Length: 389
Image (tube, rainbow, N blue to C red; front, side, top):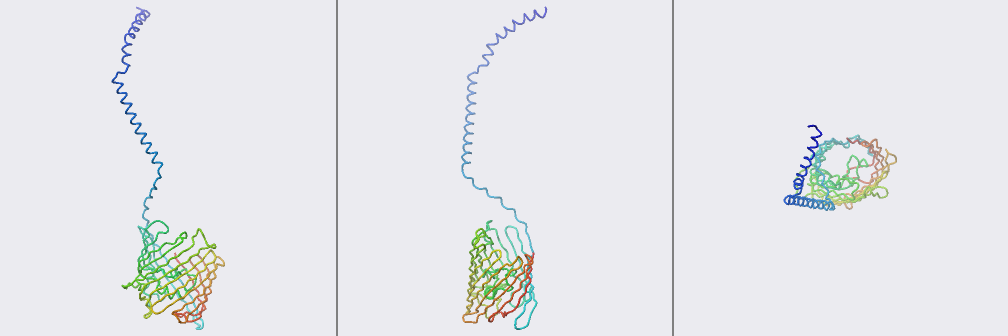
C-alpha cells in the first residue's frame, strides 16, 4: 500500500476523532458553579485589599498636610579638653615731680592657665608675680581660680555660672582687664572704691559678650573678706552690674553706646585693707561709654558709704586714633575721701603706640592738684605692655 492511499484512509479518521471529542472539550472549558464561586471570592478579597490600601494612602496624604514638628538635632559630641597658657607683663618707668626721683619697676607680671573640659565646663587660674604682690595685706599671689558651667543652653544669651575666686562686677573700669586699660593707671576713685576689693570668693552668674544683645548682667554672692581670704562670715557681699547698650546691627552715631549701673552691698570687713579702714557697707556706680572705629569716650561716677566715711569720685576720658598705631588720650578726674574732706583732682594726657595686637607702649603725663589718698603726685609714667598668647 503506497503513501497516497494511506493519507486518504487516515484523513477521514482524524476528522471523525475531532468531531467526537469537540463536545467533551467544550464542556471542559465551561466553568462550573463551584469555580464561579471561587472566582467571586478571590475578586472580593482583592477588592478588600484595594480598599484598605486606599485608606492608608488617604491617611498619609492627611498627615502630609499637618505641620511637621522640627526634629531635634543629635546631641553634640563631647568637646576635647583644651588648655591654654596666658598672661601679660607690664614694665614701667615713672618720675615724681618736685622730688627728683624716678624708678624702673615691674608693674604687673601675671601668668595662668585656662581651658575647656567635657560637659560644658571651663576653668581658669591666674597668678601674679609682680613686686610686692605677695607681701603685706594683698592676700597672696592667686588672682583668679574658678570653674565655669556653660551648659544651660546653646543660645548666645545663655548665662554662665562661675564658682571660685574672681572679679566682682562693681565699676566698669575695675572689671576691665588691667592689660588693656586705656591709661597707665586707673582713675583714683576706681582704685579707692572698687579695685581695693575687686576680687573675692563666691558664686557668680553672668551673660557672655554678645554684640547683638541689647543688655547684659553680672551678679555674684561672695564672702566679703577679700582676695584669698576664705574667712567664714555672717553676712555676704552682693555685687551686681546691669547694662543697656546698642546692638551691632543698629549703631548709634556710627558707633556703640552703653549705659551701666553697678552696686556692691554688704556689711563686711575687707581683710586686705589696713586696720581701721576695713569696714565696707554700700557702693554704687553709674557709667556711660561710646566708641567707634577712631573715637571713644567714657565717664563714670562712683559713691559709697563705708563705716563713717562717705566717699565719691568721678572721671571722664576721651581717646582719638590719629593713625592706625597712635592714639591720643585725655582724662580728668576727681575724688573725695569723705564729706567735707579735701578732694583731689588729676588731669592726664596720654599717647599710646600699638606695635601689634598684643604689644603697646603708653606715655602718660599726670598733673595732680591736691593730696591723693595713695600719695600720687604729678609726673611721667611710661609703660610697655605685652600679652600672650
